[in-house]
Length: 266
Ligand code: PEP
Ligand code: MN
Image (cartoon, rainbow, N blue to C red; front, side):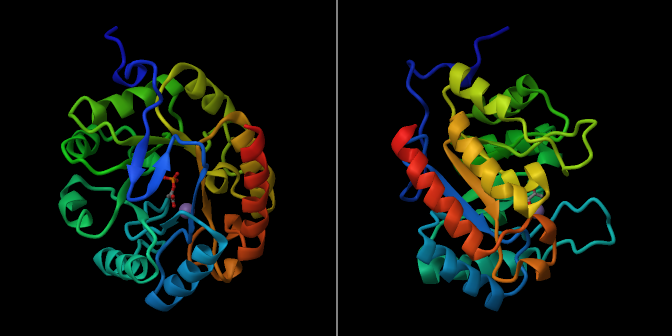
């Protein structure tokens, strides 16, 4: 097999920049925000709190890949407008998911980084189109993808010319049903050892249970992750999607404190 693009780069770790935020540097990148963009008011209140906590990037979905078609599907372009205006007002870069290649051009008017969600990791048309942009991409691991398949998905983007790819481990489907997914931290250790591409962890979807998010966040950093993406809300129980895994601002503050301590060690 041809040598993988992400295995090259003269032995140096590839660093991915999103405005002033650097993935793959010494500082761990913390991304947080609600699962879905709900309203301007709620997004602004969350954004301000996160900024005060030192969170580097704001997340929030406008196009939501919900398991049931009867569940809230996101505010779409209206949501993109909301998150962009919050981002500009409080000066924080954003990441949001695009599910359809036809939405890429328009989304780039709003977002600083595009997320490829777990369900779309195998959508090679979408990956190739993203490879033709120069936007930073957050590529989540497919819910049943092997590490090799995930790496190949990153190659689909990079081979088109866009090397601004950050991987995100978000748990895989296993026989275990206590947690929503099984957070595979082996993958983080493998990627750090074998590849030169930044990798972050999503302990929210990786566990599905907010009480497990703090410990798995710290475990992720210990495994070598370059950052975390954590779902948070000013009123977690009232989040319109993924409430059960959404942490409070207080809990996020404690997680960030722990990450700062681990940064001194790893
Ligand atoms: C999300 O980030 O809200 C999301 C839907 O994630 P995933 O694609 O990992 O399920
Ligand atoms: Mn979610």
